[in-house]
Image (cartoon, rainbow over all chains, first blue to last red; front, top):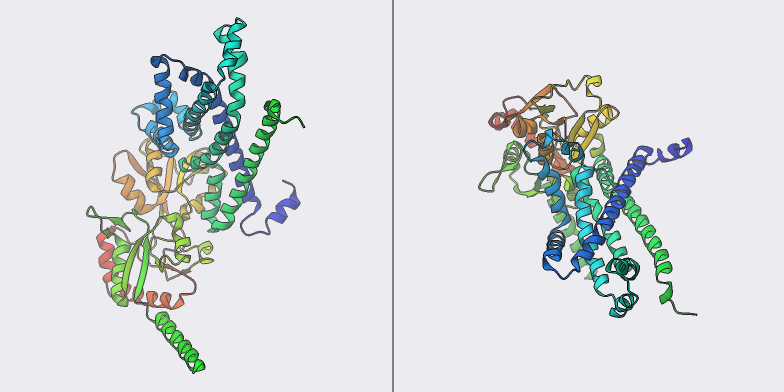
Length: 239
Length: 251
């Protein structure tokens, strides 16, 4: 940070240079955590959603059970189970898994991935099942195989229908990531709680962090609006 | 006639106001449980502990009707300022930052902060070279947190917890190398169990613990100071202290 900014910041009571750096670290952690969990969750949920639409109950059943469990329980409880539960497994500290689970970041990432993948699976499944029969039949008439049909027709068509619902999921995930602070991760909320308990200034600490979440949310909304403009161009009125 | 009514109402308001200001007959006192042995719940659900008993003795001395409120630590000072209760007797150490927001009575006890770790860890907490890269757990916003943040934040990694329970779980799971907590808490939650021990020397921190009140309630502070002074001198304090501690916390 340039010196004049540091000097200007240090004239404040709460928002000193140290505090702002703490918020910045929190912001980086939040963005990393949310971005990674959404990315991995999305990659997992596309095949899961396809499996979920298969008629055979032995294929779709397990996926149904998975989404049922992870959508049926609070994210906070899932995080508690993964973070504290795993540490209580006898002898886990001696295995290589511990190098991953010792840090609070990876248990939180795992919980978030499993949670967001469950919701995204259901969003994509809905879009897949709403594919007009005509599109599938036309693809079949062209002699496309199942794989080619899925790749060329069904998935792109479903992606367009899933886009708006998925943008909601992304925003919810950003807001849900606030609970990462209960397992000692210093994300935006964790930074705000540290600053709050140091200065006893709840309004300053939490309103500042709320504004940062809002800025992130507006960025997400902007990105999705651009995507919608591109992908749903054919639905726009002509004039 | 109208003027008379207004004058009478004003006089009445002043009277009741002054009566309430002088005699605190109903005091609501907040505790954060469990924080053994200072305040915790007995198996039957009733509150007990060093500070609870001291508060009971104090209320008897003040001849006041005391209501005990349970409030979690994070919301302690906001709750006081929002008038959810009138006093905090929950091991709140006197610090300059807190004095900006609340009014403290004279200190009524002081306990040191203690370093605790698993039996296989024997690092000396004062040896900054050995401490490099160690992960230390503290309770967020405590004087121990401030001490570690100000003196060691470049050397060790600090993890802040809301409750002592979560911190103990992470020490047990080896996510933490050591914890720096209020000595009695460490004694109760860690030394009573196998596999944990104290490392280094207890560190005297801060100006002790006082009853926290709103700044406007100077009269309440005066009364509480007088009552506590009496308890400290007539032996009541010592009797209660001996019930809970093997060492001296009097201040």
